[in-house]
Amino acid sequence: MTTQMIIRIDNEIKDRLSRLARIEGKTTSEMVRRLIEDYIRDRDIGTYIDDLWDRTGRKLKSKGVTPEAINKAVKASRKEKR
Figure 1 (cartoon, rainbow, N blue to C red):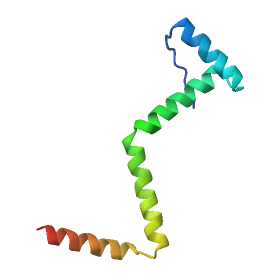
Figure 2 (figure 1 turned 30 degrees about the horizontal axis):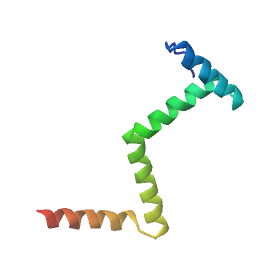
Figure 3 (figure 1 turned 60 degrees about the vertical axis):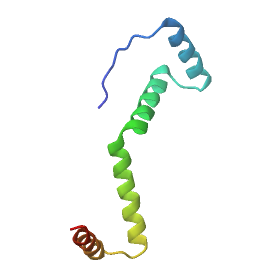
């Protein structure tokens, strides 16, 4: 589901954005959506952490590391820190 957002920007900025969007064959709405999505992706630490866990999990799985081995390593590490 999409929703509409109303923003206020300087006329010159709007005209420049519209011109650049046309050059790229896009609408100003497409450009603004992409810019907002990029902004959120670059600054949302939660998404970064989730991606990091996914990549780590895939790498461990490809090396044959089992969940049991991970649990054992975590327990051993926690025991050492006490």
